[in-house]
Length: 145
Image (cartoon, rainbow, N blue to C red; front, side, top):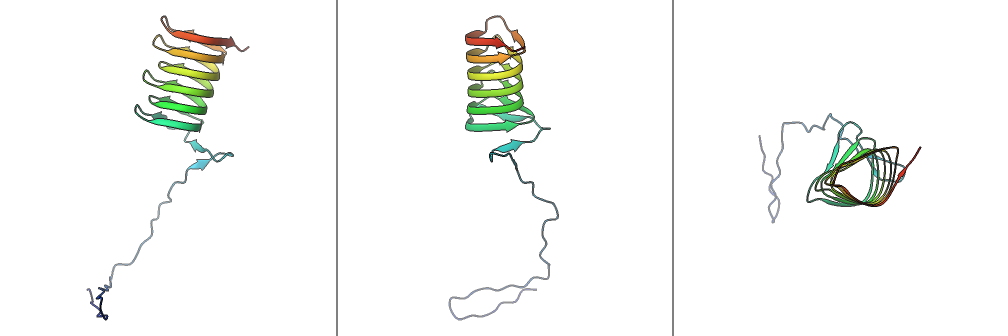
């Protein structure tokens, strides 16, 4: 099955195999890129930025983005959920923004939900607003008609 070929020092082992080489039949998925070169996230799966993870940059998603870690930059998504331990700093544009953690920056959204545990600093423009008793809000909340 294996043959050893002798070559002048240093000695090199050459083997032959009867098993043909195969190539994968499945296509390897390639991340989608937006016009700006930013990775575009899958619309059917929620994306989670876990506690202990910090991301600086731009995020573009047609789906749900759940943040338990820290983000700094620009977020454009269908829905953004800032979890109780999540921290967001920057600009957000989304249809739905739910804040349970800390938000600092500017946002434009359709639905804005600020939980009792939330700390919000900045300027948010919204169409529909819900605020939990005990939430901390410093800045402007502006209704868009």
